[in-house]
Amino acid sequence: MKITGDQQLIKKMNKTIVLDTIRQKQPLSRADISAAIGLNKATVSSLVAELIDSRLVNEIGPGESSGGRKPTLLLFNKQAGFAIGVDIRVSDLLAVLVDLEGNVIREKSVPLADSEPGSMAEQIRKTVAQLSRRLPESPYGIVGIGIGVPGLVDETSRVVSAPNLGWDNVDLAGALAAELGDNIHIDNEANAGAIGEKLYGAGRDSLNLIYLSIGVGIGSGIIVGGELYRGTSNFSGEVGHMTVAEDGPLCRCGNRGCWETLASEKALVDRAASLWKEDAPSLEEILASAKQGDKDAVELLNEIGSQLGVGLANLVNILNPELIVIGNRLSLAGEVFEDAMLGTIKNRSLSYHRKKTHVAFAKLGIRSTALGAASMPITAFLTDPDVSVQETV
Ligand SMILES: [Zn+2]
Image 1 (cartoon, rainbow, N blue to C red):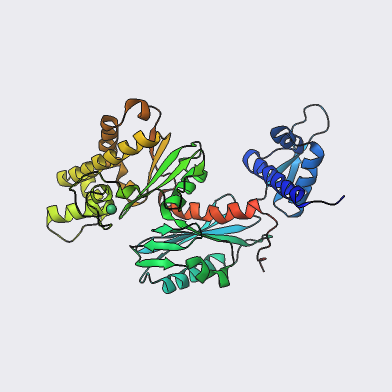
Image 2: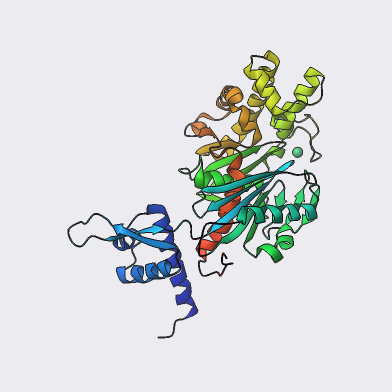
């Protein structure tokens, strides 16, 4: 019988579903898979045989019998390959090497002297080479690379604008492809952070969540029904530029009173500098003073917390999320400003909207973006497990 294109597509989709089921419910038997997804046992067995051939699935010893012969259990081979996730931050770059389940094998943080696109590409190549050295034996080696960028990234992975890096219209994926291959995914850092927390962190059990990346500015990744909401041009989530004070401070976007001029790490540091009439203290210094009981420092952090609450109340009313995850640098001071932030959300949001909303701090800490970025090539690889990738030597 001739297999048509449609049949091949359906077979591929079924194979992906079988693999997803094994990843989510492992260890399990072929009969368990058949019962879970409603495909007949013969089809499941033939797809599992292909997955075992491609070394994405392993058989392990027999499980409990429900009467007859003990079934063989299946496990996802999380070390069939590895991926690298990179978080480009303003002053440094954090890179992680992970297995196919997102477990960190190695990580490296590199200070950035120069953010010019050519130097950045060179630094990324160097870091990837260092992380890839002497990988554990695996059939697929490095399956791909994901990069989170503090800026706008369009649907073709082109960095349209990253003001903090001084980038306009940069094709970083193109610059890296010759050496690092095609499976390179570039996305906004807050989008990557949202995916990281959804897959591996505080958002695992939530379908509707907002991840807030609060550093120099405020960005967000919005997950609706388990999927990232990308907007028409991939530019969704710029919540930092929501106007919260009509005649507020001038923002780097040209508008006045944007949320990030009142509630970001930069807003905190600028206020501390003008209050204490000294060079801008770091977030860590302000936090240390607050913990030692310095009233000004505590008050500054509470003000930031309540300004955060103002914007969050707007988001709660608009999106009615199940979970809000506070991530990136400002979350380091979360324990100090949390009460002020929650109090303002409570006072300013609609009661029915906030009733089921929880607020949490990022579980992956400063790794949310790097891990989310690493998950992107993994998802692409596992959705199309026939793709050929470089073999490890
Ligand atoms: Zn703005």
